[in-house]
Length: 78
Image (cartoon, rainbow, N blue to C red; front, side):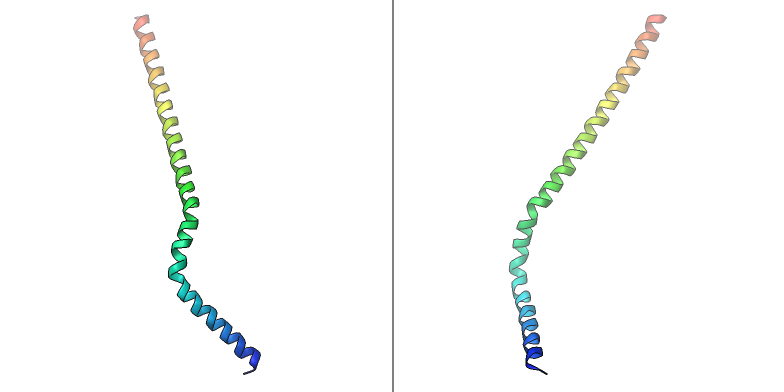
């Protein structure tokens, strides 16, 4: 094995070992970095769900108002 190949293997082994050692320490940091993105996505999802709920309630209210107008017009004509 040439010296360059041995050095390359040593570097790869050191990087692999360092990655294993840093893993438990990096995970919480990665979670903290990702938290604002996840939080923003959840907030957008909640806002969209609330908007859809408001639209459904508005449609139901308009449907009830229309039904009451029809009912009132039938009573007036009788």
